[in-house]
Image (cartoon, rainbow, N blue to C red; front, top):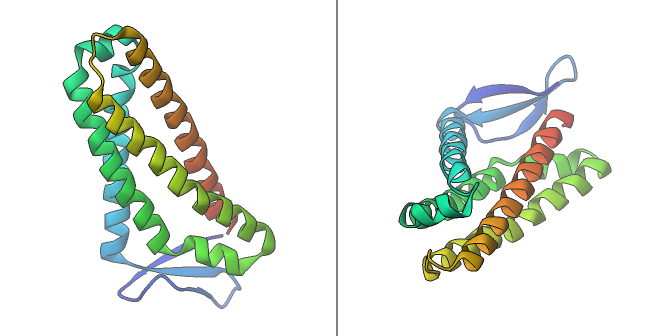
Length: 162
């Protein structure tokens, strides 16, 4: 069982009297993580319907450019907060199995970020009146979204297993 203890201290796990690990988290930092997750979900919820069909994406191209740029920036913050939060380090110290999982998940951050960064750059360079390019970029966003969702599920499982 993972319990959160809100304190002004850093994110350091410690066993309580029952042997359950407690993770102390700075309250302001916890709020930042919560706000970040809400902002990230909001952006994904705005982008996904636009990218369901080529013509919808073409009709909303300037909006899509701005949203993907925002997603790139938000994802940079998201990964920074996750890595600063410390659950990767705690899992690595905790057990060999969790260590392998944590290292794999942490290593995915750079490739996921590179994927959305490159996509945001390419969308801003493409004309929306080129259907084959729009289709290609829509498919790339869908691949990114699925990979990111699997990554987030893996992180949630890591936290719960810790």
